[in-house]
Image (cartoon, rainbow, N blue to C red; front, side, top):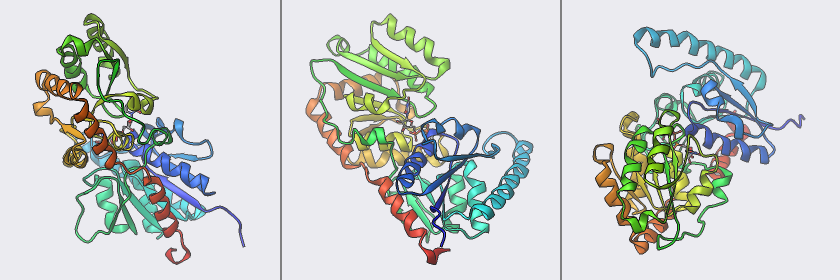
Amino acid sequence: MSEKAPLLVIAAGGTGGHMFPAQALAEAMLRKGWRVKLSTDARGARYTGGFPHTVEIEQIASATFARGGILAKLAVIPKIAGGVIGSVFKMLGDKPDVVVGFGGYPSIPALAAATILRRPRMIHEQNGVLGRVNQVFAKRVSGVACGTWPTELPEGIDTAHTGNPVRGTVLERAGAGYIPPGDYPMSLLVMGGSQGARILSDVVPPAIAALPLDILQNLRVSHQARDEDGERVVQFYAEHGINADVQPFFHDVPNRMSEAQLVISRAGASSVADISVIGRPSILVPFAAATGDHQSANARGLSDAGGAIVMPESTFTVEALSEQLASVLTNPDGAQLMANAALSCGKPDATEQLVALVETLATPQST
Ligand SMILES: CC(=O)N[C@H]1[C@@H](OP(=O)(O)OP(=O)(O)OC[C@H]2O[C@@H](n3ccc(=O)[nH]c3=O)[C@H](O)[C@@H]2O)O[C@H](CO)[C@@H](O)[C@@H]1O
């Protein structure tokens, strides 16, 4: 009998939103003694720095139907077909025990190869609406795990609500004590997802500047701004005497979030999961152009529970935001209730639930 450790292939790509949950599962399976391979493209590879070094990275050619005209879309087909053929050959040798797709175009080759070779396979959908790739595979896998509840699904699909795995550094701050706003130094965290968001750089700084002076003088702002917006955001805060740290990406978000009295954020799946697991009041601005308006779906659970204020882009003005900021920052009891409500939506055991699903799939009868 071979003593070789079982092999998990994780297929994910594109943005941090797909990669961070994939990283959480990779770390947990390694701890269980599994071998882990990650199949991703060049964009996804930018987020692999945090993956344990023992995870083998298989970089595949980038290909997405989402951009360009009809010719560009047609040119993608041979690239994807090449990726699938390459994955089939790799899997014939590797014989993975389980393949898990986390969405994004780079997950196509490994999931398609697993389907062709009938390897045990499942998908995890982070958002409240199935992404394009997961829509294709939902009926061709043995399990669909959902990060957001409820998630809109095609009929006849059996799902498990696992929640979205969050990073270990987020879990370390799960339910960290909340200090409601008051007459002392307070922190605001402004973040636009793994790639930042221009609208937050346009609206948030002037909305903060319009706050009453007694609040303003106590505020410290951490503001994630895209590279191209960074300079003007830094300049605005400086001109208005606002204590602000502006960076294109904060590597210590869990720390900053746990210290924050309020978070202003896009409603990407992982951001919502981080906010819920740490338990902080938030103002969420769903990305209006997200496929199927999935960011509104992501924010719904948190706002229905009373943990978040949702401001659609159409109503996200300087005046409206300033009013909402003041309403939270001058109401410590209300802010504490929001923090508690957010925490009640958190699924800190999401990774363990996914691990259990992977182990069930790996049982001998599934091959
Ligand atoms: C614009 C877009 O299409 N966004 C999608 C993308 O989100 P995207 O990857 O941008 O955003 P997510 O909210 O899912 O994840 C962002 C992650 O990055 C972290 N973070 C953010 C800023 C920062 O400075 N430092 C940092 O660590 C957040 O805490 C979070 O953990 O994939 C998600 C998951 O499929 C979707 O829900 C989003 O709709």
